[in-house]
Length: 196
Image (cartoon, rainbow, N blue to C red; front, side):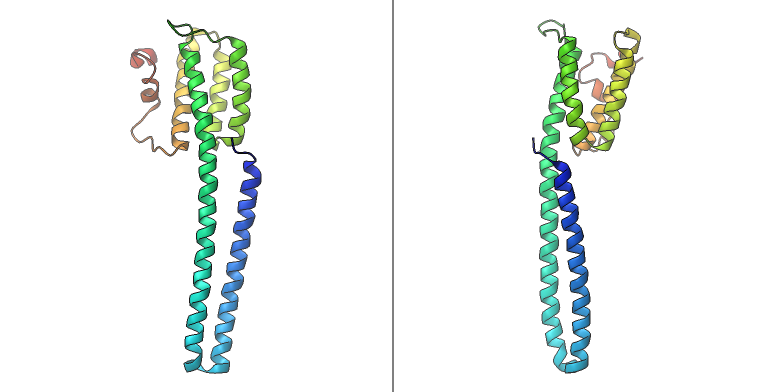
């Protein structure tokens, strides 16, 4: 995984602030310079100079803005790559736990589950969106409270479905027309009976 998203984000913000200060100073300089040329050179001789300088300044500003936006896109792509790996690993493990003990699927023991969630929680704190992190916390709390209680299975499944929807949204899906029930139906047979 890429490291130090906090320092990258801070650097990006500082670069953005510096760019706006430079743009502001350039704008003031162009306005002041244009006014001075009109006063000293006269309108007829100042126009071609002002047009040339304005074109150059606008080209420079356009170049700097495009570079800044390109850097932002690179940061977002790096962050997205890290999220994809994390989310896929998390979902695969959770589905393994759900299917644990079924024919052909080895049982996942409690120590392995605890170890996985300890490592995953650390990564989610760093990489997950705010919405995903909130849904994950809710999922953990309800899962812990309902562990070993068959009557809690429905509630745990519902919050897991909400978490999966939040993960999809963070990955760029609109989730339009998709509910938690639809997500659960991908791995729960007869989901309507299960949720009834």
